[in-house]
Length: 184
Length: 451
Image 1 (cartoon, rainbow over the protein chains, first blue to last red):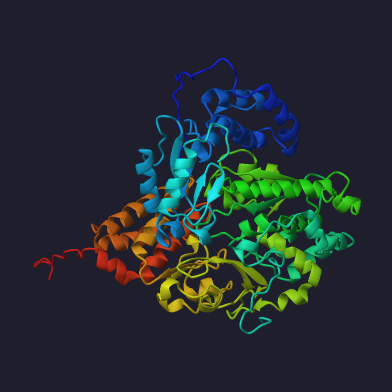
Image 2 (cartoon, rainbow over the protein chains, first blue to last red; image 1 turned 60 degrees about the vertical axis):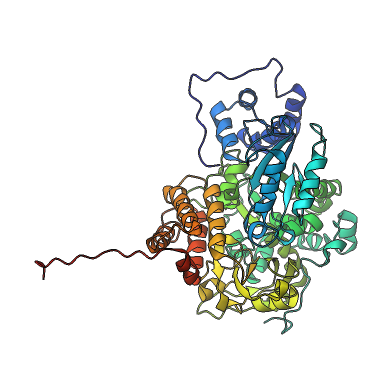
């Protein structure tokens, strides 16, 4: 969150030949997403969710494509992308591990600090980093809304409750074999 | 007054949700209808929309999202329909640390929420409802989406009009997923997020009821508030007012009805309980949550989400109602989801954790909040490390007291949360902080000539 990133005017956007926003996606957005919002900008968040989900990041090229599709300025897209934590410009790992480190998870249970230490050690990366093989991204998250079963962690979209260091270790071992797009 | 003197659980919102976590299952459309669901909607569609608003107003249903603003009064701020679109936004951005009550409703009884949405949309003649759910609630978003599809398939919503055309008034409901920003729980930031922009709270006025989503009149309600509209319309205002407590403050507004209370922390049975407002915190912990974990003593509690501040060791008997703010020196009842701390808890670490949260979640729009939250975290980290001085403590209080809506330096109340959390922890547990800092006094020189 906080401050927008500000690429300079001379920045070169890395490009690949095939577009990120596929014809299929655009057809779906036109049919299902755009009619739900009074302005074209309104459809931006659902569209960004689609791109983030499909590619695990929202590269600059995709932002330009979205801007063109919606008829808005690319800076409007960057403005929104840079604000929300779930949208990332750098590609995330196949499995994003989000350990909750809010009040109940940190202070009232088997501490999230221990879980984060364990994950750091097992994965060999720091919080906010991605492993070299692109399998894991480790992040610390704020309250995941499950304080009664603290401590908790999100593995991609799945919430794991009442964690211990041992449970987290075995979850990480299992997650090593998750393939891109696969469910954990 | 409470229907039972010992505040027995009163399942109103949780009548289809068992207290035992293992027995909880999502109530889908067929089961919801079989247990009396959507009957209330069908009945109220024969009423005039204004009558519904009047009843909700008479029930003094106070907003369950944190501020406690009466929902009926909020609805009555809308001007008469002018033919243009009007919107309902449902706030399910439950990101306040310690809060996990709306999740229960969406997870297990999503149709109760949808029925509330339909009644509110009809009462205020709002054609489109946006269900704004936080990005981290992946599972809940899927459950709600499925329930929504069921409701459409069964003609509750859609072009034909509410309840298979029982009313000509048609309502569309849209699920809008947020993407991980606490500030979007602030009502105008929520509107900005639906419009596809960064979640920066708007300057008010104009208030959303006049100019909200896409520049049109908009009502924003919490999930639990809308779910509570259904039993009020089903059983009547008098029934609702029998639950809960009157205010004992001069000119205070009563706290009627039941409330979902998600208790976490050092208790034996942390869970979401539905109880009448006014239950003393001690009774909530000792009777319903199985007492303090490991038989430890109560040290303090976060009143209802970290932004409300903490209750001190001597405030264990505080009744959980909307008076709590003025009586016990906290910001308010908040979401009524207390986090309980036992005697071994390090309150300096608690304060640091809370400051880290607010620093990360400040949207950066107003300087006192953006900069102040960072400085508070630096100071408190220094104190936790043992490198702080008594002056740091005073500076902590000074910075905290200068940010937020209360001193009038920010657009929204996020900074007030940080302000109240820090001030109440430091003031109520001052000796603990003083033990961690090095005393330092300002030397005073008195010149002989000035005598």
